[in-house]
Each structure stands twice: as C-alpha cells, then as structure tokens.
Image 1 (cartoon, rainbow, N blue to C red):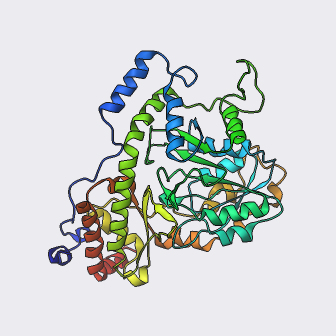
Image 2: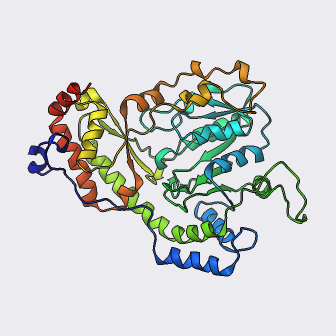
Image 3: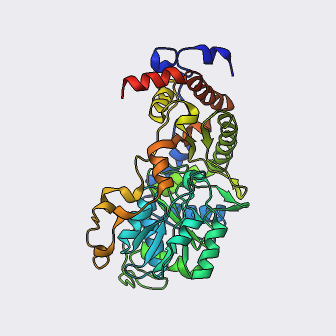
Length: 420
C-alpha cells in the first residue's frame, strides 16, 4: 500500500479521493448486438414462435450449463413460478427459501399458491444453511429453493441429500450465478430444475428475461407447455392443456442474449480472478470478512462481491464506512435493508387471492433468522459486478480505499458521532 494513500485525509472529510476515474460500464455491448437486433428487425419475425433467435439461445445456454433443456421466459420470477407449477406442487404446500435474497424468490412461491418457509443463511457464505433447512422441514414441505447468492454456489450436495431422504424438489435460484460452477459442474444442472434471470443488472442481460434449465425430460415438457399457453407438441394452436399463459421471450431479447452469451465465459473468468484477488487483499484488514468460498466452489460468478464488516474490529460504523467508500470513488452499498420475511407483504400477509386457507395460521412476525438480520442491519457490504470487469489496478484502488478508511477510522468514527 502506498503511504501517500494512508496519509491523506479522507475524501469524506475534505481530502482527495483514491479514485476519480469511472469503473467499467454495464452493460457491455457493441457491433454484434447491433447486427443481431437489425437482423431480427428486418426479418419481421419478432416473436418466439416465428424466429430462430430464442430457440438458438435456449440450446446454447442450456449446453453451457450442463443441461439438455432450456426454456426462455419473460423474467426470473416467472421462471421460478413455472418450475413450482411444473413440479406438481399442490395448493399451500410448503417451500423452504432463504430470507437473504431478492423478493422474487419468495413472492413466486406465494403466486404459485404455496407457502414460503424461511430458513436462515450461513453468516459467512450468505447462502441458505442446510442445517436451518433441516430444522424447518415439516410433513408439508415439498420443495427447497437454494439461492446461489452473489454467484457463490450453495451447498447442493447437502440439499440434494435432504431431497432424496424426504422426496423433495430442489429448484436452484441461479439468478446471480450465470457461469458459476460447483465441483467443476455448472450451476443449473445441480438440482431438479434451475431458474436464471437476464434483468438489467445481471451478468448476462437483455434488460429483462429468464430461463429454466433441467435434465428432466418430463419436467422440461411441463415447463415448456406452461410457458406457451398450455400447448403441447402435436397439438393444434387453439388447444390448451393446463392453466398457463404466454411467458415466451421475444426474438429481440433472444438476439441480444446470443451476442451477450459470446462474452460470458471471458467475463466470468475475469470477475472470478478479480474477486479472488480483492478478497485476499481485504481479508488482511481487521474486521473485514469477504464472503467465504467453500472448496466446492470451482467458479464464482461474482454478480456481487460481498463482505462482512465487523464495526468493533474495524473501528468505525458500517454506515460511515459506506459513505467514506463512496467519497473515495468506490460505488458500494449495504445491500438489503431488512430480511425478506420482514417485508410488509409478509408481515401483513398481503397475499391477494393466494393462501386463503393457510393465512390465519401463518405468522411471519414470529420468524427468527438472526444471521440474515445481522447481515442486513449491521454487516453486509456489496460491490456490484461491473467493477470486476476491470483490471487488477482497479482492484488495488478498491483495496487502497478500504486501507485508507481503516487508517483514518478514528476520525471517521468521530465524524459519525457528530451526525448521530
């Protein structure tokens, strides 16, 4: 670390920032995306049923993730709901989900007229804790949705063992995990079915979109029927076999995703190298704990770089550290402000027409997930994926900002006290 970086006053307190130039922009695009969009535009075949782009993307994406089947849909929430429906779960069966995840992991369960049961996460990995899942099992449990949070694969051997023992479905929420791998096997092929997202912030994006991947032929057929108005192979256009809708992805998005997919392997490798490098640098500072990477993780997609900040060990409160980082030119956040089960929808049981029979016995106010709450309220620090498409020098700037803040922690703590 350069002495000049430590000796300078914090930018938040009037000093010069560590970094003034921008990090990598997102999304990354160029002539390939432009050519693909114009090709679709000029073809006049803009819908999934008429053009080749989405079908081609489904094949390529599924193959990249070790699966025989890929079904592209309008977003990652719909893909989760379709997976639950295709699995044949019945009204008000229970599905175990983590509390440290985006709203959709649990809202999709409610929209399938199923009951989300929250099991806590591991504090050091941010991922669903298999022991908490086992403790949450009841005779009504039918499925588990482990989230590969931030792109770190969850402990899939443990979840699949529980699934075999209790005859459960395992649905991977891989919205963050394009290109990640577990014991050299790609995520998306580890459970019975997986759900991906192509929303704007995701590591593979077309603005919106989602994907289901599976190696189960019957499950794939059910998902494909549900995403296409209940139609089946060999049926006629006006023939609908199950409750469903039009959840098909369009050809413009398919074209963009085909172009983006050509970039994914190299981008994922770069993110993983940079993420591991930064984690080693930051772990040397007191009170900073980068997301633990178990041995089974053979590739982390780093949709987010996560770390825990222990205020007592580091010497300054998280909120002040986040402000100081931003002033030093490092985009960052504290992530979720509160655990998912504390969302107003769950606290107030605002489920619309769903869960009518179970509503009276559900009480999400009584749910306790202390690790998730601790991450939300006290410890989590997030850096977004685009930062990790840069150079090692970019990682050094991030590390220098943390080092500078730690060196001036007393001044930062005093500043924070004056504002409390």
